[in-house]
Image 1 (tube, rainbow, N blue to C red):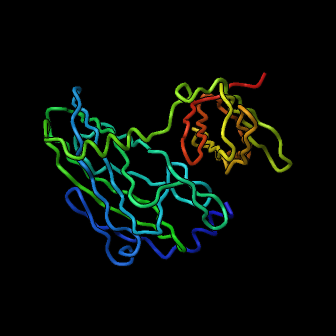
Image 2: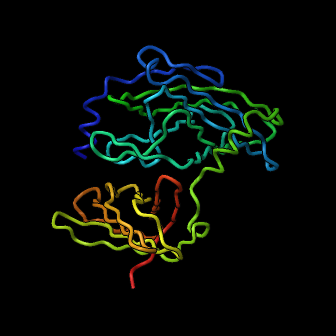
Length: 278
């Protein structure tokens, strides 16, 4: 939390990236950081849902953040509440990179990132009226919170647009545990002198490359998990991270809710849930 407050102290105010029909261009201070944000219509699937994309284009030297950005970053947030005929919107996340921010590792994207979004209309026979407020952070030597407002009306059966780029982003998603050959994942709570840590082990069928970084997400709204210390030994990635609960009660770890991602410079593995040791 101290690292997060240090990051927030350098921010110079929210930068609007504008509002447009499907695309927007950075304005004001953001001209040096965000070159544009676009809503890409994508294509309609057989069940009437749509695979679309949100593209963020950054200036050289700047990066933005992943779903779980580390303690020095702020994740993008999507607000679709102004939309009509939209039952659900689920973002997909291509494999992120690792950055040093304020002396700690942050997780995110440099250059241009396209985030696929799966859109389910309430009525597939009626146009989707999309209204998105996207809040995100961008960092270089300083960090700047940015906001984009995007809107679009997409009629049923509209022509495909941007499919190849969206499919490439989908192909860059993290592997599942089964795809990556993960054999077993365990996790437990352990006292750390100030509270508790969550300790996890990811055991794979084959030896793992050194330098992997583990990211733990609690999947529980009243639980916070900090940055993990990770190490790799043979087929096993070990991770330990502080865990805290809201209020005075100690944390209760719901193992089936835990989401653990193992990253390096070549791949990412997305693991859902863990088992008790033993």
